[in-house]
Length: 74
View 1 (cartoon, one colour):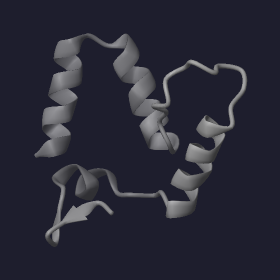
View 2: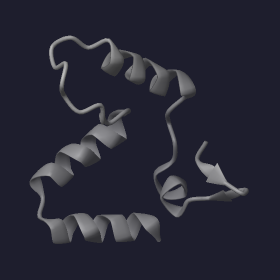
View 3: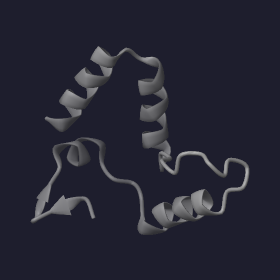
């Protein structure tokens, strides 16, 4: 799932992947069956690391976000 043509992304190697298919499926199920925001965005961070990075990137300046992504990507 995180590889393409047998090559792993650099960010995956640096952060590690701690999600299973069941984690992603459970999150998708919650989004589809959520009633409190029927017109809300279906995009949700899945997993502790992703939620943390999403929260930090929401309050940090764009240049800092680009720097972090550049460092993670290699």
